Image (cartoon, rainbow, N blue to C red):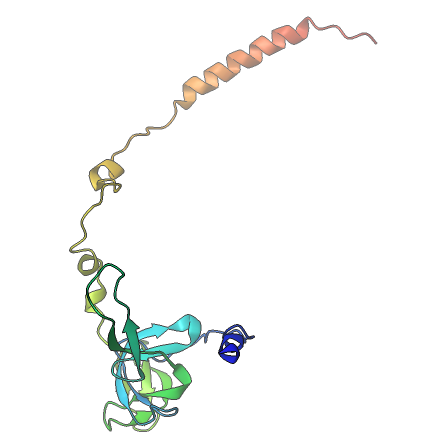
Length: 187
């Protein structure tokens, strides 16, 4: 019991995030090391700050959901995917369906693509059509504290009349000069 507590609060070196990533959400990957070695699946989530990836159906952990104090339901258990370090997986080759390392190549028109090192096939990035602004905000309902777009876009400030400000400033300068003429300083 105490050792687990000490382990939880012990020093853990900071994980430095990788600068370059070849794996994105929606890719098909193979696990090449660890206790899940040999399994494959689709990437659900990429945790770049922790250098980890969540793969659908791989590295399942049993989670317990406690029942509420007032509810009559009992405690339930369910399985949930846990993150795996990105170094433990490789992308799947689209031709051979086997794990392969990736290099970056460029097409004739200059677009950057991922190329399989085993077969030389281009590994396409998954379609991201579902990430458009309209799709993400289609069912959004304005809350009580949200300002309507018509009110937010209404122009209420029309600027200053700089000619009037300049005239007032010139009058002030003339008045100060007249007062300064009457000042006498002893030598």
